[in-house]
Length: 137
Image (cartoon, rainbow, N blue to C red; front, side, top):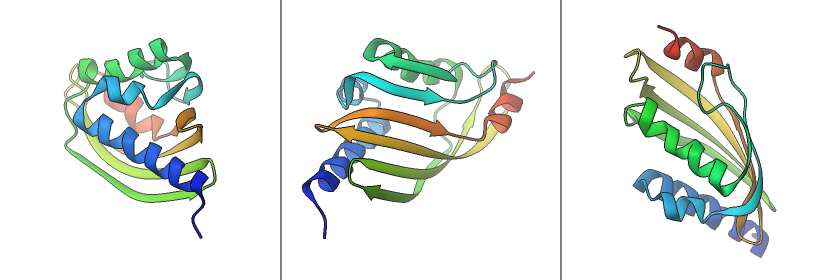
């Protein structure tokens, strides 16, 4: 049986990916709460690695991608598991770093927590070594 909390989490995650895929930064940022536990682990040469908490910092995070990467060569969500306020999405994508011309395949997991229809936690677990290598000339 699906609860209202699960539907809200699923709908919020769906809205996040729809906005991200459309390049709609206003709609994308609208999915986040005012303060977010936002973290992406990675090497120092990966520009989006690190922790953030405000919408302005999150806007900067998503604004980095078109500055340093080509559009995705491929993108596929393979799994989503939702339980209450939490959703975990597993996806595959291929991007190219514009500065080096190197491509990387990234199989990653995103852990979302949604409260009051807004994302309050966004933790990304990705192949930081492959990304590091792609950013290394």
